[in-house]
Image (cartoon, rainbow, N blue to C red; front, side, top):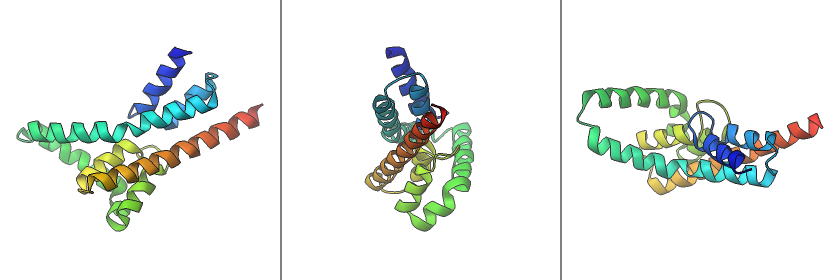
Length: 152
């Protein structure tokens, strides 16, 4: 059981799936629904503070290196292309909407990067991303639950 919990947590905090993968993984592996949801949610909520700390630390220490600056600019262009219109136009609500849609290329990681790029105030960005993550986890939990009911 602990192995399933750890994998659910790791899938939910990883940039390759977030809770969109973690919650279904936990439920499919017979983890109680409540614990799969809670684990996925908590892991996904941890992304913003960890990523923002990493972004600030790396920018402070590595901005002078051209390879780092080029990589950040490339990633910034990708994030602006995916989230730019919504976030520039709607601000807080656009960021929340971008994070809450459970599709590839959206979520807490890209939302955090977008918040840093668009210089959204830290508290507002945290609240928008947290609300988006909560709604996204609820959507995934409902889809997983509906799927499990339809197969039983």
